Image 1 (tube, rainbow, N blue to C red):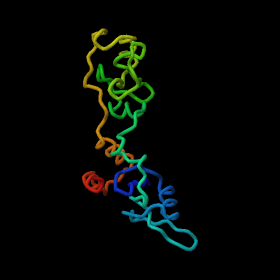
Image 2 (cartoon, rainbow, N blue to C red):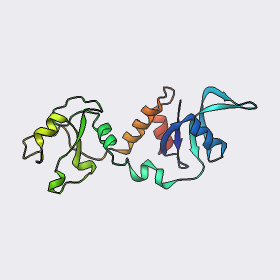
Image 3 (cartoon, rainbow, N blue to C red):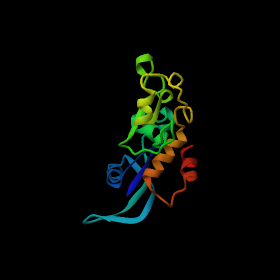
Length: 173
């Protein structure tokens, strides 16, 4: 069971284990917003299993809305849905690579706008050249994913059928 953590302003922060959520509740750092129909029991008490909790203090660094989704290799793969952006081949995590549209040797950087998910064959074919120089075309432009995508990914990880994406988005905004 996973628990969605909301910031004090109701922005989604992250998904944590129910155990971590219980620690936040018992140390009074968070309050229960919604619970599952299950209970966990100690020797002397019974607690509802947390489904959504809200932090009591606003933590600026954790707000998705403030900073968007942080750039990382895994997040580029998620943004591109583990699909090669040149040949549209569906990839596994093991076979996915990162391609720099403008190679780092030519001044390209590790940014959302300059990196895409790519298969090994296309990455080798493109080599140390730009997409234009290698006559390869991107399926779609590389850009920073919207905040709504972060929320969708979080809810996928949250794995809850009872909660509607629109309901959470309404709470968060």
